[in-house]
Amino acid sequence: MADFVARLVFFASAPFAIVLAAELFPVRGALIDVGLALFVFLLGEAPRRGAMRFRPVKFLLREALAFESYYREQQPRRFVYYVAYPLLFPYWLYNREARREFWMFRGYTLGSFLILLASLGWQFFSSWRPQLGFRDFLPAVLLSLGVETLLVLSLLMPIATTVVWYHGSFRRRRLSVILLVGALSTTYALSRVLDHRDPIVSYLTRERVRLRTAAARKSAHHALQNAVEVAWRDLVKQKNAVQADGKVEGKALDDARAALESFYKHDEAFAFDLWASPRNRPRVLVLYAQSRRKRPPIWVALKDGGELRKPDLLPKGAFLAMRDAADTTDAVGMVWDD
Image 1 (cartoon, rainbow, N blue to C red):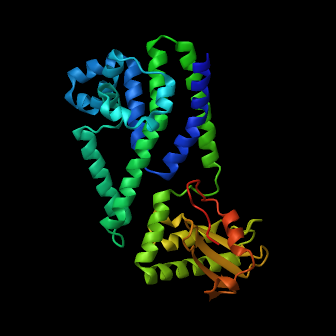
Image 2: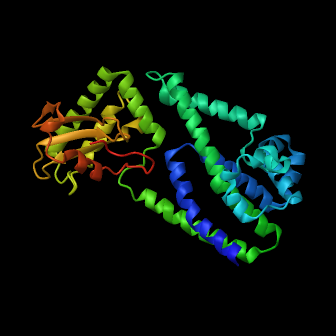
């Protein structure tokens, strides 16, 4: 019963971390891989018969079928072992059986490795070029792979092995309860994400904004200045555009982000917000993007239609108000630098 309660608590809390990681980092490939492996495992012999008849199916399900074969032969270990798995790093490298299980989750076949390379190449040319080069891109790749690996080892392995254990030991009622709790928790976590006024901007997208701005300052400033001027023209015509916290929504924000795409990528434009003061008949309008700790924020501002270049010319407490108004805040180190 204690083991069941521990798994239940894990299934109730893990979806929040998984949903957050999927929003901030490109880890959806790992989620799909583990989900497909579990799906094939639960279906039993049907996928294996299909793979024997059709080679493309066999190639597609190669990793999932290996997962299914391994856990048909090998019973999962205790739940606490998988919860503490990242802390057991030396053990599952030198122990043969533990190493084999590790590669079930984190190893790459030739096919999956080629898919990974193709995906990285597409990301580089579509999202990083032309201002950013491979030297900027490589740290982002290593960080993404590290986060993905940590996600698999700390969250997906306990989930997958729990499903395998309860299914293999015919504890179907407990498995149903745990899956129901996990589904409800995931639904709630997703609803919290969708409740944001703006999309959550990923960590790597914000890094691209910072790096792209630093790589071409004049072009970036021209795009930012043009965007805030477009928003100002909309704002003077638009009623009730400024919310109680100073955030500007509606046509002004949409047009500003569209104007930013003359320099920034489409997803990068969503890292920027508009803030105005005072709420009625605003005189100051700021287009800004949040910054990581100890880095200056990216911002441009207008006062009565003219550009403001010095922070001390903004209303007192403006940066703090902008931080509170921004709805694109993530939970991994993205804080406003006053």
